Amino acid sequence: MAVSEMGAEQKPTELATLITALDGRPLRRVLEIGVFQGGTFWLWRQLAGPKGQVIGVDLREPRCRPCDEGRAHSSCPRARLRELGEMVFGDSHEKATRRQVEKLLAGEKVDLLHVDGDHEDPGVAKDVDLYAPFLRRGGVMVFHDVASDAYPAVKAFWRAIRAANPHALEFVSEPKDWGGIGLVPF
Ligand SMILES: C[S@@+](CC[C@H](N)C(=O)[O-])C[C@H]1O[C@@H](n2cnc3c(N)ncnc32)[C@H](O)[C@@H]1O
Ligand SMILES: [Zn+2]
Image 1 (cartoon, rainbow, N blue to C red):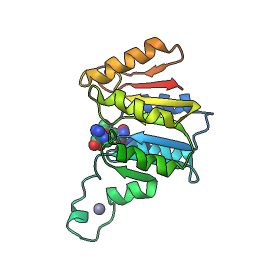
Image 2 (cartoon, rainbow, N blue to C red):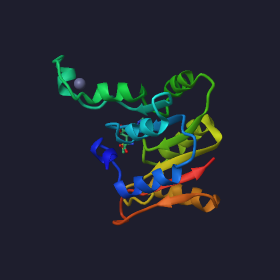
Image 3 (cartoon, helix red, strand yellow):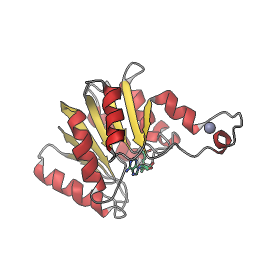
Image 4 (cartoon, rainbow, N blue to C red):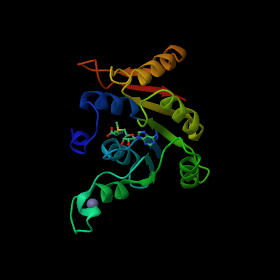
């Protein structure tokens, strides 16, 4: 699956189910918290199309030694992120980071918010508190690692959302001890 080749930290089968579930939904604007090497960022760009707006937040740029050493190079992961969308580098929980996102949106709301940044407690809940207000009514919030034993905070947070929302969907494939995607309409 192309998105795995783009470095997505995801199970291809779960992503495929998510893509099917999103089919037919307008995805003109997407906000991703936690971009890493841009695997899912690439997916959002494909779904939003060239005219869509794709915004990503991460603590730092991906590693690129040639960039750091000022050497000419191709296949640069940093350049790739810049080509795919608008990146904000900083802690998602910082006011300044949120303000930059707000500025990029210029009053518009997003159709999809992907929460895949801080996987600890209360980081994941904080991301929802801070960025869900940018989601339009009828948009969707997507979580990754909802089944991951390595991230009990995300798992517990998702369990609470799922219990409170009858429209929440969960895509978890074998082995069920890592990954897992949760989707909840807003
Ligand atoms: C699992 S990776 C994201 C993977 C990506 N969404 C994908 O599927 O290809 C998590 C990312 O979240 C970032 N992150 C963790 N805590 C963060 C925070 N407080 N603010 C912004 N980014 C954060 C990390 O730097 C890391 O790149
Ligand atoms: Zn580079």
